Each structure stands twice: as C-alpha cells, then as structure tokens.
Image (cartoon, rainbow, N blue to C red; front, side, top):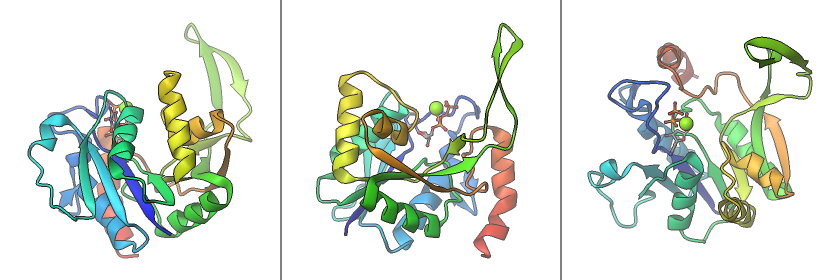
Length: 224
Ligand code: CTP
Ligand code: MG
C-alpha cells in the first residue's frame, strides 16, 4: 500500500498576523511546516509528501530529484492548494492524506487508524466533540441554541482512497464549491466519511496565542 501526504502551506495567516506566515514560525528549533513534514516521513507509512507553498517561496526551495518531498505552487484558497498538490503528485498511490501545515501534534496511532478506516469506507477524518455550548446569533443577539450532541470539530489528517479524493476534488472544482476541508466535500458527493476520535491537543495554530500554547506543549509532547 502506498500513501501520499498533501500539506497545504500556502496560506497568508491573516488571523495570525505579523510578517512571517505562521507555518514558518519556530517549533522545537525548526519551522512548523518542516517539523510536520519530517514527522510524516519518519512515520514509516508514507511514500511521498507534497507541500503547497506560495510562488515567492517556491523559487527559493531547492528541489532534489527523487526526493520524497515535492514543493508545488499553492492557490487562492486552501482547496485550490490541495488540488495543485494532488495534480502534481502523480497517480501511483492507494491512499491520500491531507494535513494542515499548522497542526504539529497529530498522533501517528490516529493516522494509522484513519488509513485503515479510509481503505475500508473510502474516507475518514479525526473529529473531537465540542465542549462549549453553541448558539446561533442574528443581528448581535442569540437566535437559537444548537444541539451539540452530534457535532464534532474536524481536524486533520483527513484520509481518502486515491480515487475518492480525485473525484471529490474534481467535482468541487467543476461546481465551484470551495470547502474548508476535504471530508465535507467527499460527503457532499455521497461518499461514506467515517469519523475517528481526534485529540484535543491536535490544535490548528490559527492565532498568536495558539503558537504560545503549542510551544509550551512541545517539550511534554516530544518526550512521549
Ligand atoms: N492554505 C493554503 N492555501 C491557501 C490558504 C490556506 O495552503 N490559499 C493552508 C494554510 O497554509 C494552512 C491550512 O491551509 O496550513 C489551514 O488554513 P488556515 O489555518 O486557515 O491558514 P491561513 O489561511 O493561512 O490563515 P487565515 O485563514 O487566518 O488567513
Ligand atoms: Mg484560511
């Protein structure tokens, strides 16, 4: 079985702010995205990692032929970045994982469970139950309270059979549907998308305070 990992890392991090995009902020002495790529390569499950980066960065990265890591130009949206990486990767894979560049704390045991589930059902993602009460609002006022008992927050890595992700991405592009994750797109086109228990530590670094949390968590994590 051959596993491809796609890492969208071409965002500008508007919510994080600052001059250096969040995926290049340091964690354990290296840029977060490098740390993430290395974790996948060292897992022993992964054949190839394709990283979508901005055009400006693409001209400065050295591409080693035959390497297990490939860099491609990202797109306007996360989904376009994923599509560009998918198209550049080649076809020789059974399973594809898509993982945010800014989620350094994914678990390899969860990744393995996701791969198994995706091979069986076509697609799988890690979800964590919500803990806050969720209200809908309108015009600055609470309009409805949402039943959270069936709600989960979607994390990555999200894993798909190769043909499932190809079909879902192609249909979404054709219909101009721009999703914030691929599990949602696969479900939209009728595929069975299984949810596997995620991990509250698998945070997406989105705002500056998330980086402080991640750096504090890092040493405890790497000692595991
Ligand atoms: N991403 C990407 N291409 C884009 C937009 C986002 O590859 N055009 C990537 C980001 O680099 C990140 C992941 O998608 O690794 C998750 O997106 P998000 O956390 O929203 O990052 P940004 O879009 O960079 O941040 P923001 O939404 O705050 O601008
Ligand atoms: Mg974004």
